[in-house]
Image (cartoon, rainbow, N blue to C red):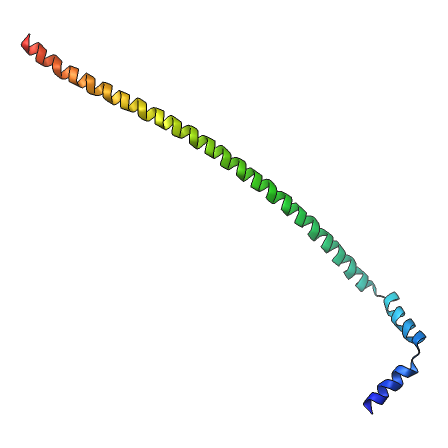
Length: 114
């Protein structure tokens, strides 16, 4: 009985009536629907713009990090070279101090003898 009722309703409405009924609901959209659709389009466009902005910013940041790492590597290499030079100069100074200490110790002995 229930199915017969549905069949009677669908048979009573012609194809033209169905088409006009479907079309009128699309044409008579409320302002709220249009505003929500426009808002969704604007939000999507904004999201795409922000996505590209973040991608560009990330690439720039990565490039800056790579440049900083390169600069720090060069600076580290130069500092190690300078440290090695200073260590060699320190060794020479220690040898010179040792030699002067020996000479100074020899001077009083020669003064006593002489």
